[in-house]
Image (tube, rainbow, N blue to C red):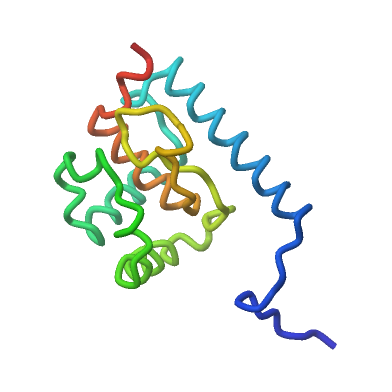
Length: 144
C-alpha cells in the first residue's frame, strides 16, 4: 500500500543531502567553465531557452530591464510573494528533467561564485536568470 509522502515533515538524510550538494557543485563548475570558454552571449543552455526567456519576461516584467537581472536579491526571491511568483513560473516547466533540482545561482552577475554571492535555487530559476544574463551580455566578462 502506497503512502503519501509529506515533504514538509520528512527528515533530511545526510547522505542524500551530500549527493545533492555534489551534483549542484558539479553543475556550477561546468557552467562556469562554459562561460570561461564559450562566453555567455554565445551559450545555449537548453533546447527551451527561448520559451524560458519569454515566459520569464511575461511573469517577471521587471527583468525586461537588464539592470534588474544583474543582482538577484535572495530575500525578495524567497519572500512569501516571491516564492509564489517563482513557484507559478517553475510549474510551467514541470515537464523538463530536473526543473526543480537544487542548484547554485550567483546573486550578482558581475562576480564569481563565492559563499557570499551564491543563492540556493531550483534549476529552472537558474536557467531563467542565467539565460537572461547571457542574452543581455552580462556574463561576457567571464570569458575576457
